[in-house]
Length: 385
Ligand code: NIG
Ligand code: FE
Image 1 (cartoon, rainbow, N blue to C red):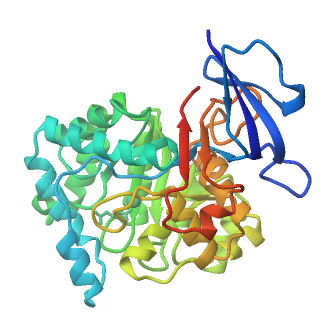
Image 2 (image 1 turned 90 degrees about the vertical axis):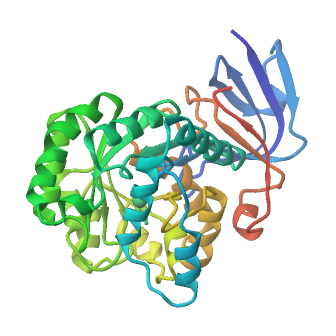
């Protein structure tokens, strides 16, 4: 058992809510980490003696490790040409997913593993300490099982997304593909997965298909998540709320009914501003959701098509500048919000007992995450102590 005392913290974001401050901000404090957990937080002058190591953070601010609750990190190739064409005026269409499916099916385990490890290193360097990974770029039984197995090597938060799009070989047999997803594919992937997800959108899966797949996943012991309302008004949010999904992600196009349904539910609205940034869609209003009482998370959606960035600080900056969030709301959404979306109580905050995931910023306050966009402010990342 090792204990480390982090002292000299200028501003600490604990996310242990206090009246008027969901971020639970305290200043001039120290944090004691014992065997990977936060065991004491308090005024630096009251810090306990006898820690095995003492680290003086010299007035830097500390936030909880970012919780990126939505990524698609296991894939091969890239779609830089598609991005360049988009910037020249071609609109985003989810059809590009098939380009990545073709490249991923061809890639060896080692090539995919090396790619994932590179991306995970990027995430860590930018302060992400908990992340989810979806399958969805193989769309065959063996292929999806392989992606889930590789994802499970780097995170316990693996999501089965066999229902990403209908693959070309099932173009004329959608029902056959949904049967495959709900049957043999789910059985092969479930041992590696914690979640099941469906892309419920025009051009992907209908609400009826999505409901079948989500219910099959739930019957196999998986929690539910939905990709919805990305490309237009649709059924994704209503489906997620009706089934009690943990999260519905994108939420770019919402009507009043969607917002009212979310406000009365435990389903988190996960916003993915990297997608609007890289596809030149309009940003959704997080303000509208927050004012209605909806729980909002921020995630990167890191994938080669709609958002090829692994940066949670960028998500915070975009959410503040483009979606009407305050800095505190955005930092909360990128930490505690992501933890809610993954139904985790051990991460996303720095209360006593939390996993000791600390991001030390080369900045006096968390505000700098939005105020200084694009600047590498992460000084040090402590992962589970
Ligand atoms: O979350 N919406 C569906 N899936 C991904 C896009 C994947 C891709 O374009 O490759 C998303 O944006
Ligand atoms: Fe996604």
